[in-house]
Image (cartoon, rainbow, N blue to C red; front, top):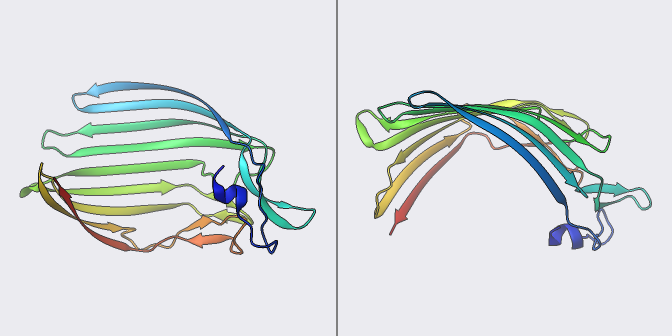
Length: 212
């Protein structure tokens, strides 16, 4: 547990400290296999199982109505991953993957735990200027349970134009996140009055990096 989980309190207005928290423990089992379907084409499949004991969660103490962090039972997650990666001779790369996850926790609905996750990445050098690369990134998140209801699933798109980094010198990059400007939400924790928290809309980022 971190200092916030153990010692934060607001004078018994909404939350109290929990100095006796114990560390969480996690056990993992993972199995995976990769197959080369053709030159530059790889398929990966994996299975995983996680068990977390003494899970730290923010709960409400019925004796005084205050929120407090407790070691609140255990949590387990099992699922499958599949990933396909293809690399073309011109330097362009395609990587796509999907995860199917089932999460269980001490007889209660597990919040903020999507059943499905997906991603797609396409990137490579510009044909007319190989000193720059262009990347397209799609990420999908399935619906997730919240305090009261569900946060809908969504798919976001990002585009990144990046200058290749040299051994020495600077490199520019321009990125646009949530390219479509859609409105998406994450489930809020117990410490919030809102049920859902809005995510950032369309975001632009210009960055300059220097290697020496």
